[in-house]
Length: 283
View 1 (cartoon, rainbow, N blue to C red):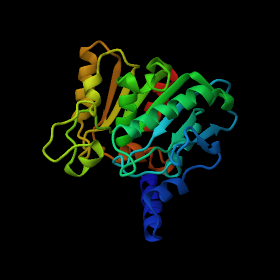
View 2: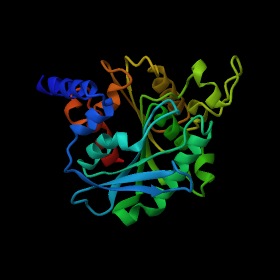
View 3: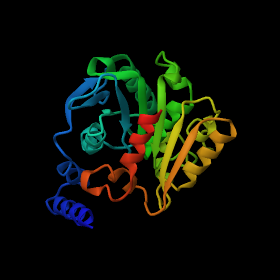
């Protein structure tokens, strides 16, 4: 109960001061968990930069999670999600958060191409920061979950950057759209016209061939942004083809709460951090 009131208090305080919910989450995140190396370029364009959060007293060959934030493929900043990075670092995991290009600067599949390029950079350079390139996991929330699912399931993205998708140890999708019909206001960023056919290359479920790296799909049953059938449908397709996938459904959580639960005083919302760390440590 104390955690509940603490989370509400800080969030309301932040909003009353004209700040975003990210300011609230980051304000209350511990500052003693990690060192940040920021704005490392993984490409030549302004938004092709990433931050690395290295745990204090990091162990040799630490496991690595590359986290892609959501924002309807139209918005987002890596700095806003440092509460996720600090939570992972507090558990001994090196966290990497890339920015990527968004609409209207680019349309599909350019934001997924950026994701693959960031993963290649991490694979090639993370050993310089104490990470194990053999244990690089991908994780994304919402639109970020869509990006990591495509990188995991559609082999051409990693091939285009000179790697095989087998370099990915596992992929964790949080509240992602995997088997969906784009909303009307999303048509332009997917190169579609109103009433036009769905591009099959957009939907991760169409690439569930059973040959991709293992996945963990975490979703809230009350999600009304990306309905829970996105996770159950993708999991069923992967299972049908003999692939490896685990699914965790939180019965009382909606879309945002699955990610908010990384924030220090909001962890009462869901055991997202515990479930992610267990998956990373056991694969």
